Image (cartoon, rainbow, N blue to C red):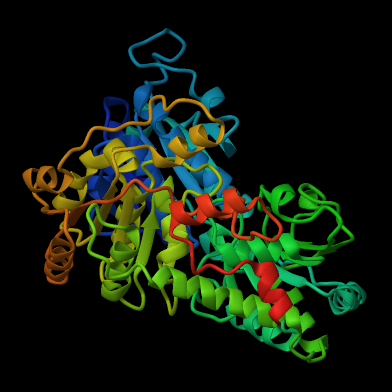
Length: 577
């Protein structure tokens, strides 16, 4: 006979067997048995108490995005469960493995309309790849084991609902986890003939581009080598930022609205695109409909979803890139390639021209220059949603072992601070940044308390422009009056001091320098509230720079508004090349 333990303790042992280090959540009465298990096993698993379940779910996602491993969160029955949804949908949309443990009233009270009772399974049907309610105490470790396997298999959300009484029941301590049996799936090899076809399409193109998504993570060196062999510019998705160093000469950045000028212009002008490991949703707006299109993905259901496909290659992106690199012949630098490099050089010079300007309110270029200067080689940047996403994509340097994440597809405001908690919990010795606008930060600012409680040395930067600037720009574009986008100012640094963090209010360039100098020696969390201009980030998706092909008066107004006098139209660079 084996010893007996409570079912909840057996379940937590399963989490440990899968290498789970952190669990994020806020207790409720329906979750008492699991909280007891977390207490019993506090020497082997780290419970992080958040102040809102949404923060716990986003922290689990933030951990998953920087590790590639399972993130775990929980909520109690009723409101605690519902609060998880925002973070779980972020995991679903960005394809992250996350396990949510959900409390439920005792089995004897289920289906009686008891206090806080909900029929929880339907709530999670859409978000989850696996969604089960435990029916017996003996099932609990098995169901959680299965949930983790499914979360990894489908890179998605698994939900396990646990009636309160079952976790207290003693069961035999004999469950054998399947964690040591788990193997990453064998991904498809590329068809060599299709690789030859892809190379032929690219060799016949005058303006080829390689577009990479997060499916290429870990293949940065091969991407660079292929770019240099074929002399082809690279464009990345937001989620793929950092796979190829931002400083690499042929990395044009991203396309779209959260994007760069070189990224938008080369993708719009491309006549052939090899699209690898991404499902970028805005392709119809930035890839010419008649451009030759090669799509490489491990999921055949994505073929043709965004663009007419000339060649679909079902393959692992890493394997595809290696075969391409082996079979490709070195080509000479084309005028197209040279113009693309000049375009990036011009863009970098334009961005850098604003650094050091001491106008007030401050410009964002100064802020990000300070962040880049203080950032370590393995810094983790968790970036919120809004204009701050545009700024992060353009100005943050993700080189070396630095990581950049954001809420990519789901685009939920309030992402950065929770995600930073998840990153810091898993990597206590790495530098972690939370970078938000004042809109997103205000949604989750209470969880500075979580950072304070666990002495997390996170550097929280808030770009305060007193506006939901991203939405304000959309209202401008549709020529409607501003409605609901104005925000009142608040001293977030000062309020963070009241919560136990070190806080700074920054209105001048000197105050900016002082705050970042002091942040170097932080012992716990730092909150730097920076009052910035509300000038809209340069809308690269609707550039007006070329007086020879666009309305000269409109160009003049655009250039003046965005201080874009030194930006050169890509058409001109192509001609000069």
